[in-house]
Image (cartoon, rainbow, N blue to C red; front, side):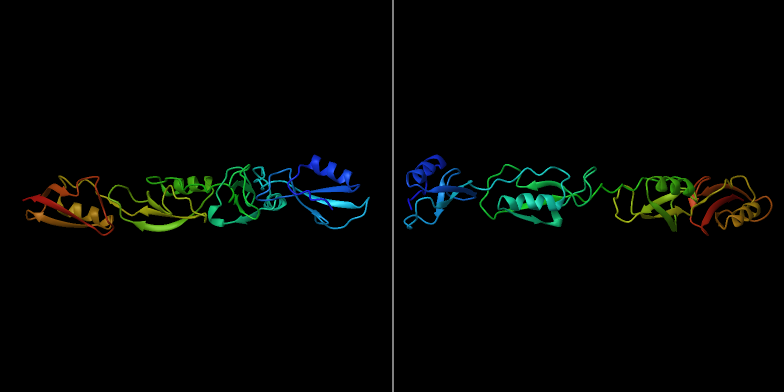
Amino acid sequence: MPDLAGMTRDRATQALQTAELQAKFVEQRHNTIAAGLVIETRPAAGTEVQAGDTVTVLISAGKPVVPDIAEGASREEAEQAIKAVQLKPVHDEATDEFHPSVPEGAVIRVQPKPGTTLDIGDEVTLVLSKGPPPTPVPDVTGLPKEEAFQKLKDAGFHPVDGGTEFSADLDAGMVVRTEPAAGATPTDTTVKVVVSNAVPVPNLVAKPVKEARQLLGQLGLKLEVVQGRGKGRLSLIYAQEPRPGGRVEPGGTVRVKTIP
């Protein structure tokens, strides 16, 4: 059996024809022998053969190259294509990404990129889609509760009552904040809506203390005279804190100054 190692396919064919042998060429990846050159033969060089015998000639296909994987290909398709060129497909969930059009679990891309030359058995990472990116929570701060609920529903969320808290900037029933906050991209669709429980302070200026106290009492608020006697029919309020239109917590106190 002649030694064909390192020959081109044409030269190997000629050598076998001269030796009256038949050739069966099989391509095989190889890290060091250039593509198109003979790696070895079976039977091996120097083995005694008979005229007319068939010799298997292993021809180098060169180093493996990362195949072109179409965006949206299934994981199984990508793994088969990578294994076919004697590379090792691997997947790390940490590298997966959201994608607006590639279905969840399908291939976005591979790393290294297609066309990269590697050694046999090197790893090729599959970057898979996590599906469409989550919708950010819309900003509903300052909206009435009902309007906020509708806006959240329209965005695909499930709004629920998140209780109340005081806000000096918002009237009762207006949304103070949400949990998760506006702009967040939660995986859960439930959003708690927290509304203001602030009580707007009425105008007490020029009112008798007794009348002002009754008015505040109807709102669940208290009155405290901090200057003046605040007694008698002639005792009128000339200043108040908070000012008219200001906001206090439920059960809060409005402080007034009176004459006399």
